[in-house]
Image 1 (cartoon, helix red, strand yellow):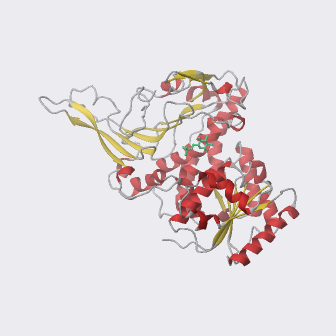
Image 2 (cartoon, rainbow, N blue to C red; image 1 turned 90 degrees about the horizontal axis):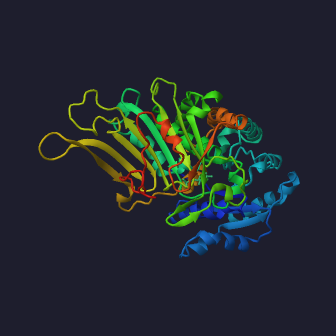
Length: 499
Ligand code: BG6
């Protein structure tokens, strides 16, 4: 087990939602598992004028009221801050000095930016100007929440700006998908088993499919989402990281540099979709009003904060290729959307069918017969579908399932994504964080699509009734076959299971 040095975590934007929903609960879980360093404190910082006690009361909402709560709350502190100029950070700096002295904590600081992105340009500079960004004796780290830019140019500018004040090794760009246990397990599935990797290439794989469906809509985040859309909100970051893990070459060792070097090679090999092909290879959709279980569900344009004439996509599906030795000619299909029938994220590896069909079965002639399904959430696990003889006379073949569910592991809790990622950063391990160059490469792939949508209003945005699997046109992307329509349970699928 790695050593976690004593440190203080400073959360900018501490009065926001993320702090109470994700960060503090993750820290509380780490505390209960004894994974926090011996000397540790959290200093919340934001514009709101709160006392330590008021901050503690505010973040308590999402914590279970158990016997550990009081001791945990003693680790939480709060400092109001403004961020107009360097002097505004002096009270925070003084407070840190005082806390280090009172609590005898070393001057190791992790700064977490959970603020509006406009402050990503300002706070790192103010930290630098106050001498808080660099230290030869103690570590200084900076965690940045997405979005990492809203287009390729702003992503590049953000990187340049961060690197003016912090070194790349100090910057931790959080993508919570990388914190999911099942995403990390992809590396273990691929590289610790002798049976998958020999097949993991263009010779045996027909196509790769990635679905990330959500049944929820924009849930009060209409103002943000309408300027973002599914492409920026989910695909450019979370889904591209999944592509990186599925498609990467084996790293030489498991460490941040080796893994991230392999991921960037995948991104560099993505075949860009030219603007004049976007309408063909990328399908965008927006949910419209519908009835789900006899209840009327509002359409996207009726959501608070959303423009009544909005053309923001709440669904996107695309087909693309990775131009390298391993994946030449293998289509990748990705789709993500809000207000789909169920919440599910999974990767489906469709293997090629056998070269010669011995058995007179409709099922076996389908290239879909062998599938490996890596379920990211929910009902986390792995499912292998293969053909088996139907008992009885003749040689009829049917597809059967071999499945593993994480829930079958006794006494094992799957840590929440933020829990894993926060601990990694505290220990100085950036493996599961996005590197600046990879973020830019992912933007390079996505940018021509966004440009095409902006400059060619004739590229359709298809409506789809809330609660369905997105526009019909997305089905036409997949040639000669169809998407898997997953259900909540890993082993179930079918078009209508959750409607
Ligand atoms: C966030 C997006 O990054 O990821 C949200 O901003 C989305 O719109 C969420 O709902 C999905 O995360 P998860 O872990 O629920 O799949």
